[in-house]
Length: 228
Ligand code: CA
Picture 1 (cartoon, rainbow, N blue to C red):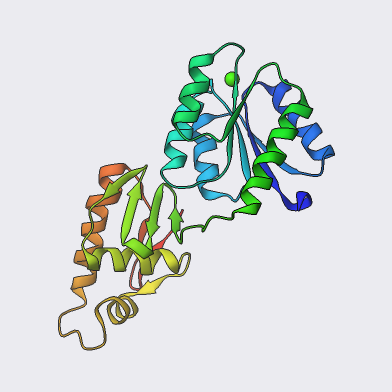
Picture 2: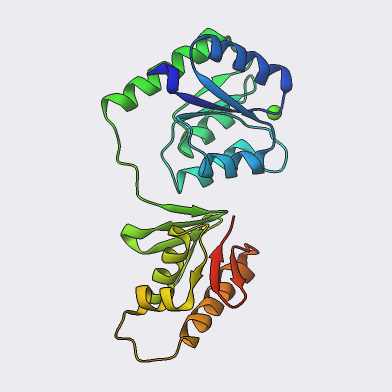
């Protein structure tokens, strides 16, 4: 199990990140390091890790904020790395949904013991990963017809949701207006293909303009495509 387990080390102090990496890899884990908080959040959501070691003080977005946001979307195990005697951080971290914390300065053995304990616990009672589609900071939950952008729920109509879901699930293929029409509105739809453009404009207003997330591109003479 350990050979394939991927640990994401979010830590801006290079030496600490490096020493964790060396010891975790020696113990058979795969690792990745990120030192920027905002990028770390995006990578946790978009990439596939088994556990996150999360420092509190980070550039651009702190560990508490990352933990809070990630918990809205995922139950990936999180161990907070807190500075010595920051009791308040520990309590806050656990309230925000962190699984555990270690206090700096820590030994690699201590971190490894906690990682193994959490992974063992998770393995014994596997939780169901919710079905979701991700593009940038836009996350779709097809089972409950819900969309979140940057952690906020966006109100979409049924048709808007289906259109977005169809586009995102076909990324990076270009879809023609006819394909979209047939799939989302059905073969018996009597209206004009303009309806596709109208609904695309609704999505652009509700998601792209409001949240500054540009993912829907028009391919002239063909149709639409989703890009990260
Ligand atoms: Ca730090």
